[in-house]
Length: 390
Image 1 (cartoon, one colour):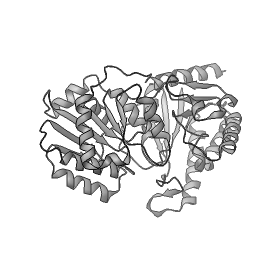
Image 2 (cartoon, one colour):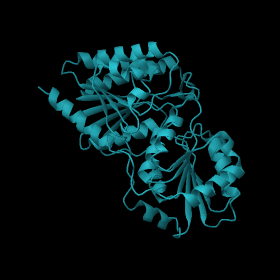
Image 3 (cartoon, one colour):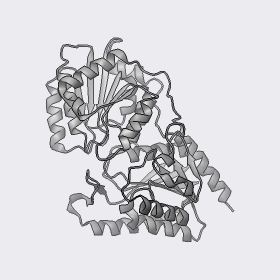
């Protein structure tokens, strides 16, 4: 079986990492991972061939598309559309998974609708077409128009909607009221989460030369494009804790953080004992498994890492919409995760919260939710492809 998985990360990296975990679950089947965001150094499983479209990204306000190096956006869009159709015709996938569309990625209809039309008309046989959807949708102000557009697209082109959530925690109808009108099956797969190595905690702590009473804090910002205010506050707060030799902080800015902002953080970190800062680590999840506290934002992938690593967390939601706040509200009933607010970012207050959390909160012993969504997704898609085979 061959799968084409389209994943477009426009601001952070969460969509990409969720897609990478799905590709692992499909092994040994071949996955064509079609991506079109900014380049990352993320590791790809052996069964994956990445097909990089010319990069497009979104500004933090999600108002417009931007091409790299000042390239003309319309020329990039034309090149992407042609490349995507060429890949489909050349590779003849048995299944096509589109991340978020048609519930999102409206600005990428220019390439996705031609791809979906090609799926319908494929002379070698129509592939299974699935929407790969995260747990919570961003709130909309054009509700009825939006719902109508989504339902029409699902009816015209899709075979199934795969909601990567534990239905006991979050169901699609909570953020898409017209779920009962969806004309194809809707399957809640469980959350998609990478698992840390079984020996991660002992291995990482040994590598960092941490004693049994030392406390490791991991501060991260996903892709980093909007993470500077949080990480800057963490650095200032940690500086106030110099008299705590048991505390150690490792900070990851994310590869997309503005170079000037990242340099400021790095320079500040070098002057503070027991603080190490770097741009990105493919081993972040294992560091979280070794940690006693995580400080981060609350995107899907970050929250799944927190749950899989069983680490207590302080999380600052992305302020542009309610998605991340909603996620924290649900998960805080199941796991020691606390929402941060802007007034919590003053150094003295944040330092106090760090100490309080380390003192009063313990690591969980097992995830309280279903984190096997990748495996369930692969199983379902394989079954659908087999049922469609002549």
